[in-house]
Length: 140
Image 1: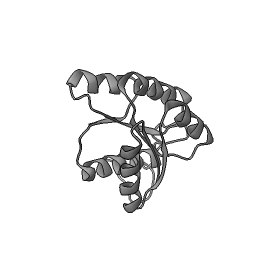
Image 2: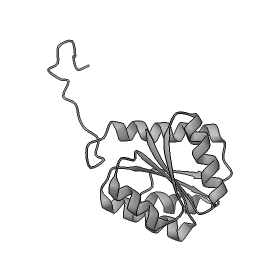
Image 3: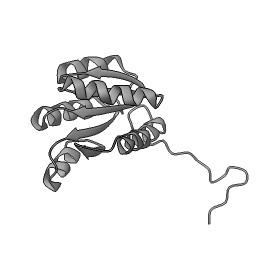
Image 4: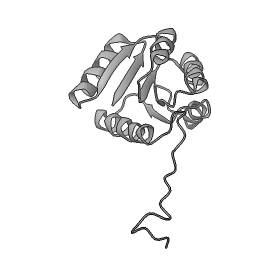
């Protein structure tokens, strides 16, 4: 699974990236919105961990979603109010995790988002598999 870690705090981005690499993820790092959009234009990412300040992070998330790549977005922020988390989800994030966080939880969330991405179509829409007439499958 390919992950792009985005954080304007270089030490934070490096620490997250190294931890994810130890969990067998292929990880790249970016530090600003323009770099994120350039890397996504090349393609190949399953999940973006977006740890930019709120206003910039929201705008980058909107652009990621508008690009229609199907990449999943996990927002990281120091904003912990329900309203802030909801705002991130409203701009298109798939998940939100507040800093500080347990690294094991971050890994679990990335795996879950990557699993959704792996089972999605080209535009990030879930693919439906016809099983009604498949041998051995019966509707309840």
